[in-house]
Image 1 (tube, rainbow, N blue to C red):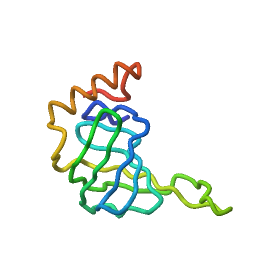
Image 2 (cartoon, rainbow, N blue to C red):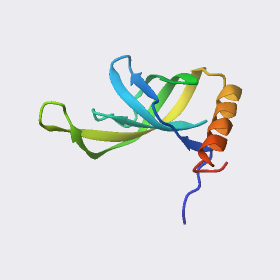
Image 3 (tube, rainbow, N blue to C red):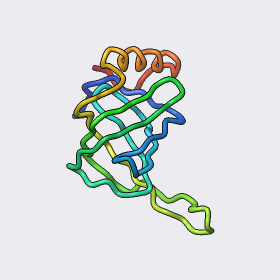
Image 4 (tube, one colour):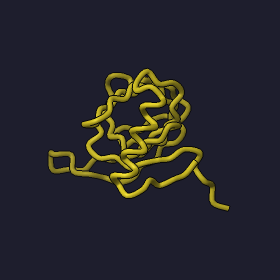
Length: 121
């Protein structure tokens, strides 16, 4: 049986951030309960760390727990070679900004703009 998600999840573009103040990540989608990240470094499941990320219309600062991570492909490294890219799911443990109500409003606006989200509560 397919597992439904607990929270509305929306895809995002140009949402860049860092984990632990040092590991660059791209946020691929966001929900009230978590994020899907892409990074050029493997992220250890079970690790809890600070995520800070910014899109044009949202700044996110949260403690997240990495729940899964796997290699998703390879991209050019800018030096003639290729580098692995990892995708990681992360649960939001606590959030400094935005406030939960503001995040829900942002998710609803993005859902409307994108023609719908990819999950329902």
